[in-house]
Length: 240
Image (cartoon, rainbow, N blue to C red; front, top):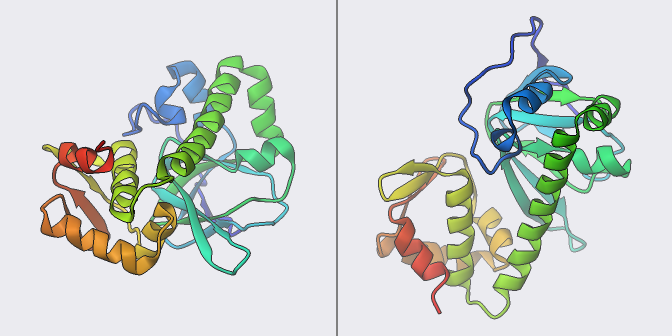
């Protein structure tokens, strides 16, 4: 892993961040949250920096403060598959820290990223001393697994436009910036990545995206996707 840039002067924990309530940090109480905000050292990374490599034997944990990272894995046929996206407020690397097994995915920054980097010993010690944090971490792990399972179940029997609409709706609701009746996803996600998340071939996703644009549901720009109408997208994603 590239160690990034470590802040030489530690600062007091920042009181206000734009963390979604569904994130680990956004859902914690002030006291517990500040325990995580002082864990390890504060680091900064530029975009397109690999933080963790699949199968490597590292056990550190990253508490994301700001920015977006993506988790990818190499499939047996050699394809790179996008598994998940994480943003400020989320935890990255906790699986290896807990079970001391090789990394299950590669994690790469999608833009400038700020985090707290903690060793396995620091992280596990924090969980032992702080039951509310341990509970919150366990709940976040369960939530991640549930999302993965729900995606597999929900996609059974669905056509590509429906699967793509569900992926975009989930990303917009979880990580989007609310704008009027819609939301803006302000990080780069490629069509191949949308295809892997949707469990579809890239040409099929390309056609589905074009249909969503032509119908006025979304607009695509440089490194962004704007959902113009979340209710309309929801109707497409979850229609009977």
